[in-house]
Length: 393
Image (cartoon, one colour):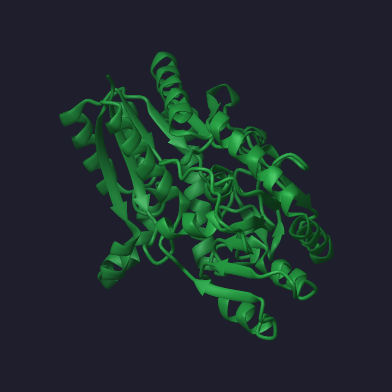
């Protein structure tokens, strides 16, 4: 059995993240299989309690955290794990933790949940449209020019410095033994940007526990996610203005919530529930005719898509990014052109009007889950990845 140190910077608890879910699920899985699992965790919520001096120093720590370097190195020296597996390192862990691993000759594995090392806002999106202007550039000057992080020149400059610093010190070329990409699409973006292609392993996320195939009455369409521009919820609401006969439930919160609620005020069939606990999402999925994923950015294998399949719920998704790797048109779901409410409305209406077809797609989605996205399948892939990291380090 292996000993593994899992490291993760939790996002703010007010902003639920699929990355938090994946981190916790893999920890449970590995412990359940008898492995020794240690953790190094930082919390973004702690920033709210920082003093003015600590806040002033945060920009430098984002680029290189001396605290994380020291703490991780001390923990590695005490515990001597076989491998260290990182998830999110932003903003409090930083790339300094990878250097601690290299200095103690312990292989570091990094799951790339988003495009943070390539893009200032981690999404490859600018003004609501997919953008790769900074890919392959040593300095992400287009991101600074367009204020891509928090619409701030200063904050964007800090993020660009973080990206440049990680390249200068050799983080990606020297300090990380293996990169895990939840999708081939994401892997290809990183390799095109200059990351070492021979150090990538495609390992999808997984859903555990298995919620089981649902036989409940399916009485509405469903959206689950952050209410922000890149998620395509405006396109969703526009489409539903022509679908008064289809109930739609929207789960989530975010910066677009007030605008979206106002836009849907005259639509009695559209219900905004707000943010709910992750444990409640499965219940909604089990009773949905289908899930709509109208994303307008390069989603990285969304957890909710896999959860829908696990529940036997088909997915209508935008024809974009890694969604094309899991949603197979006419097999386990339907695809529509991103940012096209008319095309979305046509697909949504068709699937609503053909419940038996929707059920057939859901059965295929359930089969897809059983073949690719169970805990057992993930465990096999995870161990293979750890072995690869250890033998090639």
